[in-house]
Length: 158
Image (tube, rainbow, N blue to C red; front, side, top):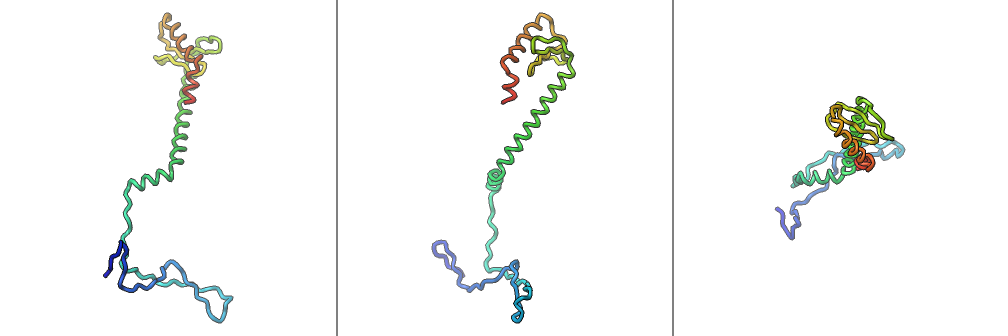
């Protein structure tokens, strides 16, 4: 039987301490102290009234995992975004190589591309091949304003 006093349990049955089986006990022969110890283990006995393991809610485990590994997750996210950025820049360079050079306007190169939407990056402007000549002047002025305002580099920085 156990008595309860202010949430402290006191056992009425005597308990003898036991040595767990994982701790080896060395035995030396009494006549030769230089001899290496002979290790053997003492068998373990079950403790009376063993308590079951505590159950931990899953959200606590998840929170603890995130606290322990948040820096690794952050670095992995940065690496994935860098890989994505490199792939996107590679696809822009692929489009530039696939397009046909039309003219050079100062330091800006103008290309004709099979894509239907005009766009620019760095100092390159890409125009659709089927654009009307009267609209081409306005599109070029618009894309040049993107270049002079450095929109590509701002997006790259962000």
